[in-house]
Structure formats: C-alpha cells, structure tokens
Amino acid sequence: MHFIVSLILGALAGFIAGKIMDSKGGLLRNILLGIVGGAIGGAILGLFGMGATNWIGSVIVSILGACLVIWVGRKVFH
Picture 1 (cartoon, rainbow, N blue to C red):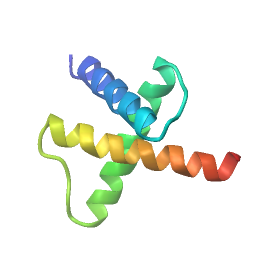
Picture 2: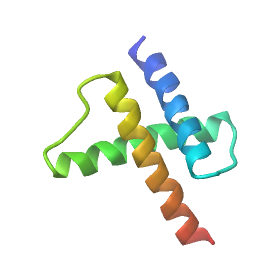
Picture 3: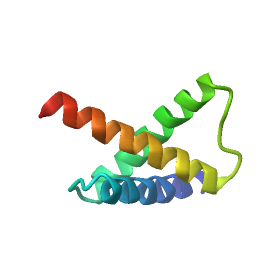
Picture 4: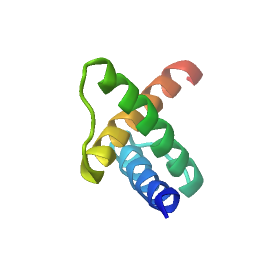
C-alpha cells in the first residue's frame, strides 16, 4: 500500500513541478520526476539537517527536487 501511495504522491509532485517549470510530459514522466525529485530533494535537505515529517512536506520536497531535476535537464540537454 505504501508503494502505491508513493507513486500517487510522486505523480502529483511531478505534475505540479511540470506546471511550475512549464515542462511537457506524460504521466510516466511525471511519476519518475516526482520520485527522483523526492530522492534528490530529500538528500539536499538532509545535508542541511532538514526533512519532511508528513506527506504534505514530502510532496513539497518532491516538487522542489523535481523542479531542480527539470532545470538541470534543460541546462544539460538544451
């Protein structure tokens, strides 16, 4: 059950990050962006001794991380 909730939250975070960054992509890309963004965002916040304590915080961290992934992707591939 936790895995399904993580996918749903990842898809939500990826969708929101895609809208914020004006990125085009489908559901699978949004899920991947949200999951990767969550891992990267969590790692970066962990370096500063911070982290998410509930699902809302996790979504926010995932959104920030996914925006960072989109930004880096644009710099590398464009």
